[in-house]
Length: 472
Image (tube, rainbow, N blue to C red; front, top):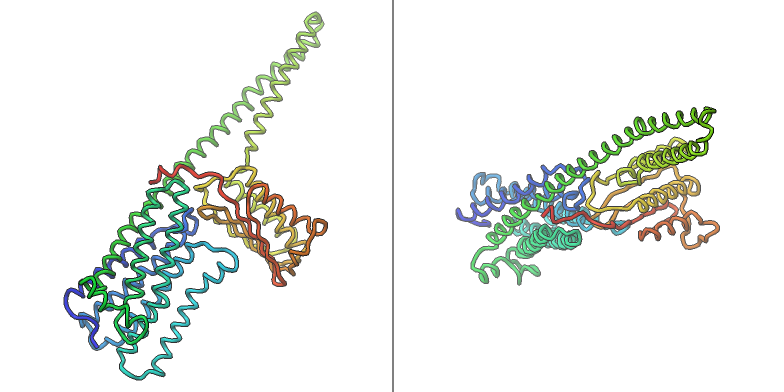
């Protein structure tokens, strides 16, 4: 059975493949290294894999239609079907990563796309053993199942995840960017239907009712044209959304420069006060000391003593000011250094392996007060201490990252665990203290424990966002 014929289809598949290939390259060259504030950019490599794999699939089909290598048609169609299913799996992974689920649900969802792909792969190799009829009928069955069970849910989950990300961006003030991402969500939903639901008409539900023939009858054009238009629109809109990465980079540079200027000014002021002003005041103090001991100044002794006391008070105030400047409040970048020091201390003192994965960018879109950062530090300290002291763990992992709404800190150990519900204030004071600290900063603390170990997850909401209108 021939799939399609005609130069118009060759052109359609060429443009279709080129669109996704371009999107894939654009996605993969974004060097975010998992440290972006935006989930879209942290997950972008999977969208890139989807684009490259899917674009290659369409070009393989183009080669079949053009009969460039007719002797290899069977090999090309087999490769196209496998690559198509793999590309949909990458899109599935991208959508799930965008949803940013944590806990057991998050672990399950991360595995789900590959589980579905492995099951489909089993069907792919098993079908020929039981269905020895028409070769093309078997190929279409494999292709349809990959579209129904991988492509359709992958596209719809991606659309839902993008829409939710757009809502978070509206809360941040990124209204124009949110509008673009909503548009991208709609396009992926349309593409999910066109590529995942509308297939060749065969005696197989729902293909017998919803199929390419019905689409062509209703709209007067082949479904491949609809897919090509959707793919091109997705690519154009996606490339414009990448501006968010450029804005975020520029924002980081501007804020880092501001912080460096402020830090240099603090140091300059501190040095000037310490090396110049304080030294001059000390010199004046010594002169007053000499005057107090001089018998000729006896009548002015009381006035000189008052002057000396006033001078000492001024020196104390300057020292206090310098102390506050040098020990400024904890900021997000300070938390990183303190946690590194904490982990190093516990590893050295207790001979325990602690893996630290700190993924908070130097410049964040949200803000946490000094009080919140301090409480986060002490909660992590208590969690690590409990894992070593009470759970007898010898392996601990500490993860700190961000979402659009939260800073997420997680401590996981392989200790003996405990029954969370049976602890009271007397034997579970550490956990009680952690809960009180979390409550004081409006954070959500979740503790799960079993014989395999304990996991502590802390979600701290951002207090405010930078002005997003600058990045629109």
